[in-house]
Image (cartoon, rainbow, N blue to C red; front, top):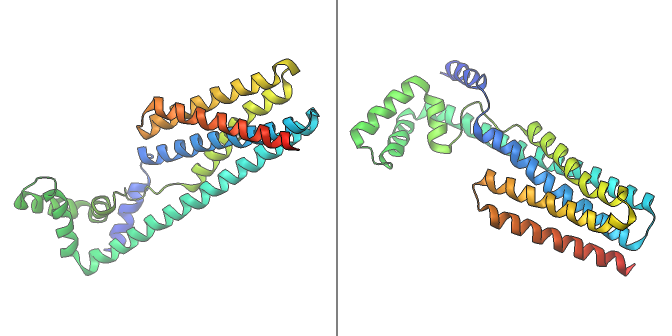
Length: 236
């Protein structure tokens, strides 16, 4: 049985990424980009409000951009690794249950289809047919909504977050340090607002949420971030 299940798992692993895996990578990217924008602009506004030295402003922004990118990447790696370990643990538990309590697993699959309006007789026939073809894959899908062999990849999430946080932070950094003095502040504000609008739109689309609400929320957070950090810099 164990050998057969290992073969099944390998067969599943050869398939393409599932939609959930792709969305997880995109989610990490959107969140990383949003954090990169807000943390970098926060530091830039604080420092720029306290000093007019462009080199100091640039170094502070660049240092924060790198710190944010690596922090986001390490956080995503740790989080997704934990999720992956949990999913693997569940699969191993179900492999053991298929050996020790096959009847219980059969009933669990039957109950799954009965709860969806299928008759007891038909749901049992479906359960027996599915378990005869792919027992482990069926059980983990029905009980935990896991597709066998398709665990979330922590490296994909980490690199996605690393890249997007860096890319997001670049917009306010470039605007604040390279625009002419007359355009430095308004240009940075515009760059931040456009960036958080984009991340709000993408997060809503990925999460099937309300686009307008997500954009307004992101813009308000961006404005508050800039306001607070500007006045923190003014204090010193």
